[in-house]
Amino acid sequence: MDGNSTSSPTPFTPPTTEEERLSWFRLIRSRRVGPSTFARLMREHGCATAALDALPAIARAAGIDDYTPCPADAAKREISAGLRAGAWPLFQGEDAYPAALVAIADPPPVLWVRGQADLLARPMVAMVGARNASSLGGRMARKLAEGLGWHGHVVVSGLARGIDTAVHGAALKTGTLAVMAGGVDVIYPAENAALAAAIADQGILLSEQPIGTQPQARHFPRRNRIVSGLSQAVVVIEAAEGSGSLITAREALEQGREVLAVPGHPLDARAAGCNHLIREGARLVRDVADIVEALTTSPAHFDCVTAYPAGTDVAARAARDNAGGAPRMRGAPVPANAASPGTTALARNIKATAGPADAGMAIANPAEGDIRDAAATGAPAPNGARACQPQGQTSPTLPDTLTLHRLILDKLGSAPLAEDQLIRDLAIPAASVAPALLFLELDGRIQRQPGGMLARL
Image 1 (cartoon, one colour):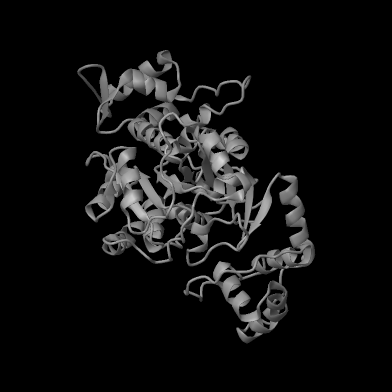
Image 2: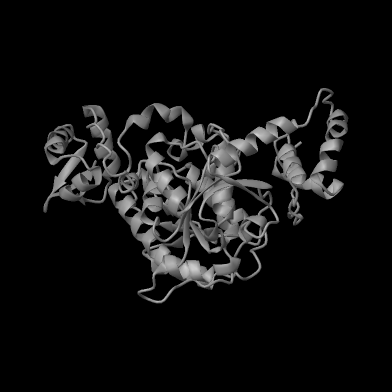
């Protein structure tokens, strides 16, 4: 039943009583009811309770004779579990519900949230990219995330390995939001548990999935539409052809958001997607100034303050700006499908590259959360998670030889990288890295260059 409505969403009157909240949960958790069907049922029947009463007859008309809506007890158990996990439900139409998300074609009727609610009122920029990010890609991601935070933006990403981990870690102090593919209480990948705990304390964890849901391949494209929907723009840093990051870019274009990309070396496969986006019209990003300029000049941007004066304590300023619930995002949201000039052709050209939005991420992009890659979660945590490691926690065990070789090759690209920088990024003793570098050099997989530089062949 879901997916038949393509019209712009109609604002709802949010539930105000416990009975109404329970009905919303029951309706959205009912079989074959997704955000689009939920919206249509609400428009046709006026409230969730009436829609629940009508569901069995609607199902029979569609040829389903044994249809039963979600039981009240199941919805109550989810609500209780969410509250026990330290989360709270946010209903579409409530003041705290992000205005940008309301503007997309299929906004989630209910979100589970953990963290600092005031961040939801601030302008947001999404940053996405490869799980097997290179050292240069990770450094660029951290630099951009820190700069966007200084300019007052909340950095949005998906808590995946690589680029996602780097930007969340860099933006912790200024504001970051992680959109979860599973339940807001289920951390994936497991090595990001410490980072997720830090985000729940200082930023926001958010999900439309029921509490306790284990992430599955089909959840990741749905997650991506929220990542882009929350944001004024999406910045792509390292993305291979056919990657999930390109799916997020396509979602952003269809939602009328700006798409920007960091260029990369033509011989590095991780740069192919970004270079393709730029060739087709995405804005090229050299530094944070390019992103800020795009946000302030795009005809599809939100009317919001995009910069704080130099030396401002961003966290204190944000708290003051949002005192009393007054949002910093002041203008009308970008209308769904209101793409800025030049983005229409770009959207057409990346569709074939990104693959269908409903394609399983396990096939489209392992870098964006393929749950079948869970066996790899024993690898050392990416750079961003290390900064969030609780005091007193022991360092991870040194990887085996094959894993170390893979980690080194992942960090290196065609662009030369200093050997000491590689060792710092790996966070592995130099005595362990040196033999691996020698093996890879003799094996013809890396090349030493003048000045202590290394490049992948």
